[in-house]
Amino acid sequence: MSPLAWQIATMVVYLVAMLLVGWYSYRRTHDLGDYMLGGRDLPPSVAALSAGASDMSGWLLMGLPGAIYASGLVESWIAVGLTVGAWANWKWVAPRLRAYSEVANDSITVPSFFENRLHDRSRALRMTSAVIILVFFTFYVSSGMTASGVFYQSSFGRSYEEGLLVISAVTVAYTLFGGFLAVSYTDFLQGVMMVAALVAVPLVGLFVVGGLGEVSSTVRAVDPDFLSLVQGATVVGVVSSLAWGLGYFGQPHIITRFMALRSADEAVAGRRIGIGWMIFSVTGAICTALVGLTYFRQHPELAITDPETVYIRMGQILFHPIIAGFMLAAVLAAIMSTMSSQLIVTSSALVEDIYRAFGKASSDTRNVLLGRLAVLVVALIAGWLAWEQNATILRLVSFAWAGFGGALGPIVLLSLYWRKLTWQGALSGMIVGALTVGFWGPSSTWGGTREDPLFGLYEIVPGFALNLLVAVVVSMMTYRRNEALEGEFDAMRTLGHEIKAEEKQA
Image 1 (cartoon, helix red, strand yellow):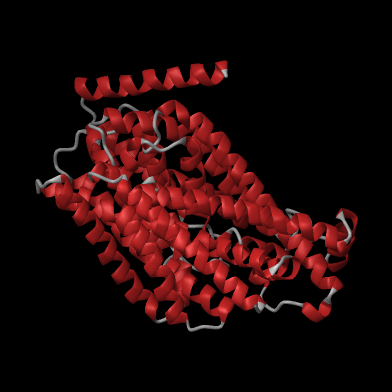
Image 2: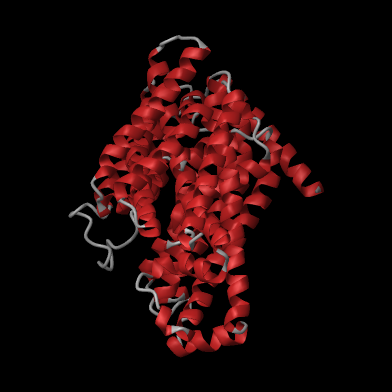
């Protein structure tokens, strides 16, 4: 068989495996709680790798190595910001959110948690956050479909449309039937594939190119400042890159993993597993770029034209076509894990937070059916947006990340750590944060350009800050003591202290 045939066969095996996981999860899904949150029965290892795989997407295997390959370590500030942000999310949000989401009327979505936590009877807070999730994630899923079509086209020489249909169909199928469990367990497998690939490529490549000394000398010969974190960096650029870490607090497809843990104290194990996975993955991506740069300098006849393909090309060169096929599947895994996570959260926003918020009572069977129908509808809309390959959709990823971080992030933190937050304050801050990101973002002429020394600041920074300020000010103006709300907050804090005690003892 030709190398391409081996790689296609490997890809087929991978896609079939994802469908089998979806079938297994389908057999374990009985009601809406199972479909949207896995019945709160997620082991910490699955939650950790699922959260990591769903947030990194193809950026970890292609975007980050490509940026380092082209410009040096100065491009790694985003990776630093994301790693610190992920650690802080697991440390400060995960245990309290798991405890509080159960105390607050057993909330199974982020919007329903906001409503139940703040005793909002107007439904305005729940509806607003659901609409934010619905709008941003529809475009987010569309960008993933676009990336899958481009990946299929560049890897196998087939059409963009064919790739979009094949990969999207498999992703939608296991998400639609298996729900949250299928998404989480496929993400777990995909996370294992991603970290294994990112460790294997630089390790094997290091022996091929002649060791660390050869890598260091070659890289410095290309550019003496290649390994510098500050050369060529600006204050605004570094702050903007580090600010990506703020986005974690408001990403619904990530923090729902915290809500799905079997218990709040398992957030400790989840944090250790998740951050360990992230450190290995990010380090592997950076080392892949450095080893790749050395290899292609030693073999100029094989030089690549697109830096973002350095991981793929190294995998094809260093390994047997079967292993190289799994290397390609790891890229696809990164894309699919993000798409599926976003689809299930968008489905929950439609069914749990909009349809059921209007008091539509129905059976568990009907609710699950509506959830599956919502996945299909969102996928069709996203596919329609992605059908005509459009680079602007891919650029919306950073905009959507900032949108969630700026609109939802401060409200998540305040709801967990400040008892005086009111629903009026949360709603006002959320709207201000979303609008600030919208006006400051890259599509706005008012906000200037990325190159502008002032407005080049990543829009999550002003969005997050203004959201926090407005939420605090309005809450101070509208706060009235509520004994039931105070009791729930104290119950959550008591559980949090127990978790800290267990962690200290361990």
